[in-house]
Length: 93
Image (tube, rainbow, N blue to C red; front, side, top):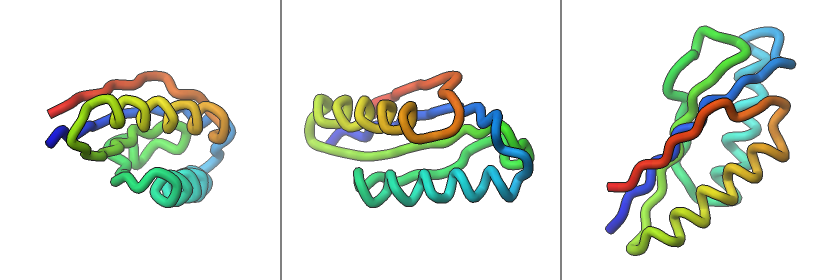
């Protein structure tokens, strides 16, 4: 079994408060969880209202489906968040 972990650091320039950031990230998280069946968590910058670091985890018997899934999630994020991905990391175990 292969576990894939993706970290995305996201800059949210249009977020004007922590409440606004949480609202934006909550809808993003819900959409990703429904669409891709992944685990999702905010890992850092909980006290910053224009920045977040999220972790996304999934597993499969093969690495290729995980790579494809992460690529779709990145594309989805780039198209649907009001911000930009400033850093991304992918790890496999």
